[in-house]
Length: 475
Image (cartoon, rainbow, N blue to C red; front, top):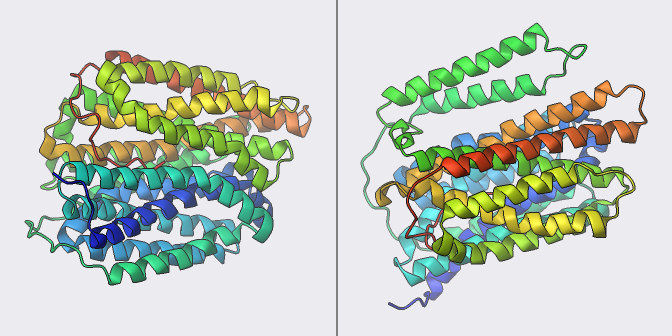
């Protein structure tokens, strides 16, 4: 079967791949600009993480709704809606006058991405012939996503230094408009009739409210080193709401997260490992950015400092399927979690006198390889025991756990760091801040150890499709 892609389909592939590119790039650019945003909007340290958290929280909770909407309303239509929402939210973020405004716009950006990405993937699945042609299309799609993550730090640093952090949000607007106009003139295969199923709106509301309550409670400052009654109450409410979510999913006609799939041990352990991984990798990127800022790096220099991490991640995703076919996803996970734990513990020794080339650079290169391989192994591990016709549902679940790990995990780690910093009353400012980073990165290392233990007990059979599982990893 020929893997040659027609001109019309190539245009469509370029559009959907660039959608992935700009939305992933946006996440990377914003992280690099965090110190500038904090200064411009006079944000407190414990509120800064919400710029990242608000995006991944809404992306995670709306992801499966976006996928279902593309099946019912049409893939092209939903992609247009997602891009429009993303563009408008980006414009709102560029005009933000206070932290709440910016955080709200980031949350809406996450909703736009949650509708765009599943629709884009569905367009590829339904427009390209199964086999070499579709694999090639997904390869290009994934490569553009990895390129967006890698280039985002450079673009973010360059624009922040030259035109200010608002330019990062303004940039999304014309790019999205170009993609929208291009998509309007592209013909796509007609939507196959699908059975109209009810949307699990109560499941969506309950999981969003529950996770938000937990993140908000964890992010609230302590009072004299202790949790306030208000903080405890909100935390308990979050737990109770998530219990309600589980009950809703148990009895819902068309659940957002089908509980029956959790009978597979490989899926359960892969999801928890993914949750922990996205927690400590999001935290590690966050703290590294603030650390570079403490060292006096410009935004562009910060972007360049992150480049080896992104480039090695791109390289390793191309060769990881070979190692998984040879050794299994489980063994890849075991090795990478050992490396990730050691990397977190190594970086927890950061101080003002460390040299980038001898301290940070080796860790970034090794962690880039290890983290990139970890994500691929988690994706494959989550579907290896699931029926092929349910790969889409399983993929949606694991992506949701990844993004929830980024929002809830970062909140935990950021709160630990700010609490430790605040308690260091008699230390110089830089020393106090770094002590917070040290503790949070040590906790990240323990997260990786827990993930390692889970990888040992994950079980499951060796996957026969490790090289061809077209599931998106939104990093």
